[in-house]
Image 1 (cartoon, helix red, strand yellow):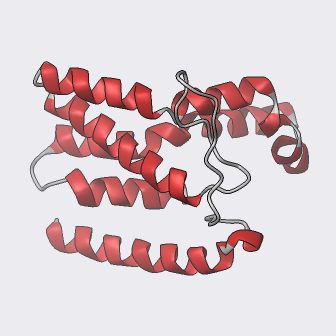
Image 2: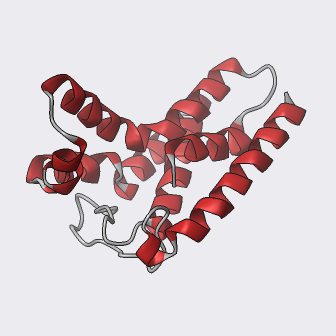
Length: 161
């Protein structure tokens, strides 16, 4: 799933009028699992690394895969959620809940590029039969559904706010 759709889902789930701190936590949590990869992409632009080299070779390097494992870890965000709930920190709980929603979507929509969602407990990857981008795994159809979902979520949020 594209990052903006993750953010829209988090906003639809948690954002409410007049709740600036909660809304910021929802948006940030929806983005958080992809933040590392955005940083890697920005680094590649400043370093002159080609898109082909980034996605074809560097993306699969141990360091980037570890960063992806950490930033897409169910146990990590579940621990943040548990701590936030135990400490009655509502914004932190919304942040973690938004990130977990992001991870559920990614878990279901990554095929050959699946993440290690259970790091540090396991390096196992669930390779979904459905991909959000890969045409060999229905990516063209998922893209249409995701676009429609994005429009619906924007309409919902426009109405709510």
